Length: 261
Image (cartoon, rainbow, N blue to C red; front, side):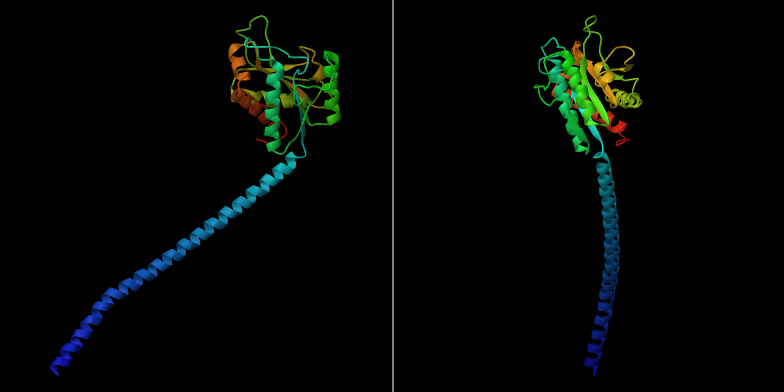
């Protein structure tokens, strides 16, 4: 009898100990399950929000590219073929520099979905080897293209102060209502990059520029820098420098088209 009582006490004591051990563990496990469930719900909510944002982003990008695809830009690499243009002290030719910058600019615009046309894509030109036919053909190509913007890309040269005169210039036509607005966007983009100083806007009242006169579509001419200036010339003839200039020009074009803030 006494033995049974001891056994019952032992069992009872064991049960009490087990309760103290098991109940907290169960409670802890339950609490952990609740926390895991809340965390899973939080993660699910974050994932859904991320997916929603991605869909919105893709939708906006699609709309932007659809809008961009409606625009057409013609890029004109100054000089070419028989006409080397200006030349630096190191023998770098304007026609090669402008072609490289033009093609790089075109690629950047294509990446944004804009249609790009060129007056030339190599040193082989489609016009006769004389200045009149050269410029007239470029204008005919521009007018036939019905592009939204025409940008002629050049390098500048100074005979009087070769080592001092530097900077970019953007020329526009006073005969075209949109030309100045495009030029303003371009000048700001070039100034913002700062690869050289900006000499500001110039217009066709200061000098006769055939392309600005005969083109019937909104046109500007960009003097990217002075090839006669050592510092400008080093940037103009350098691949990375050309990429910077192309980026600035493409930014100016995109802003003028309303495709970039």
